[in-house]
Image (tube, rainbow, N blue to C red; front, side, top):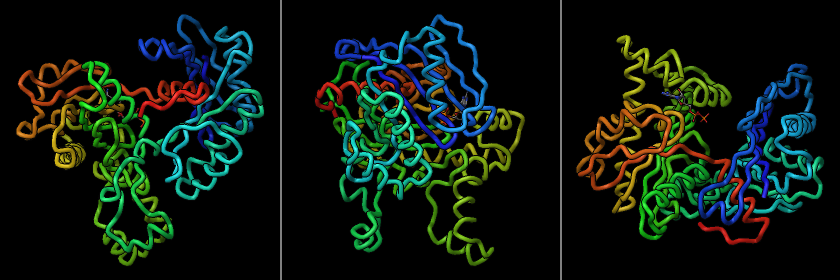
Length: 409
Ligand code: ADP
């Protein structure tokens, strides 16, 4: 089945065309036929870039005033580059949807009712869900006969028990406003956990894992027998690890203190914690780990401090989740930083050998942007780097939903 995977944002659409099926999934031989991004939608100079194996595809710069014209051009470019011969070759569309609230525990085929429920969840993810939903409506207009599936970032974490998803505030706020931990990056955590089991030939029931997704946004998850039992992001993606520009955990009283001290408004505080904090706020120079690592090498103390805080927070979460799981068989790093920054992995695993995680420095330095083991032979748990592939899971979930195959999680 040829599945068009869409990640639709406010002014961009990321897409991949993936061929998948039952046998391809079993042998892990799904094929990426093409992938790309449209940016600056809504302007006269939107740009569309498409890459397809063994093909030279020209970038397309043109006016794309809305998501509909952008998606039409995506289909045109797939045709122009010979990835498909006709739109009818797209057999299903899979959408990344950020928030599924408590309602969606698995991926689902989108119908009017599901679309309404996704819209209802927009209150919890105002910057994402409306645009994800827009992707659905424009795809439906362009391909009315083609089934469409929603794959939620939050769904994998719906197995987290109340003791981990409730906050220590009056229970009435959970009842009234559904204030609780939802967690995000679920598709990424689920993918790397699946790969770990596949690499080591293990059954879901036999493996407990801690997965660290370290990209611009960062989160850690504790996965017991294939099910998420805790994760660091919470009611919103602001909680947990220190991130590129987000603060992660902090004493909530800091917000109150700053509001009164500097007379900050709600909007000011939100901007401060989401856009000017994290690596960027701590270093005072960049949210990009590559830049900070270079700056640290030049002797920049502030960059070193930012990296230290970042890595120490990860270490604390690994320790906490080892306690939550009791026994851990694997620790996995993924995301731009997790896949490419050995120094961060090394610092995140410092002093963890008694908990069962011991990195081999030479292996760690060799695994860059690829799958590989970085633990020492005597490490009790395997420490792995696994490049994430959320689009692949979205394509597979879409295939399963369309064919009515039960979800394997
Ligand atoms: P997103 O969450 O937007 O998908 P990525 O997963 O691409 O982001 O991760 C972005 C982060 O990965 C940035 O902080 C970037 O600096 C970092 N990164 C990418 N490549 C490297 C590298 N070679 N070394 C260190 N950090 C890297």
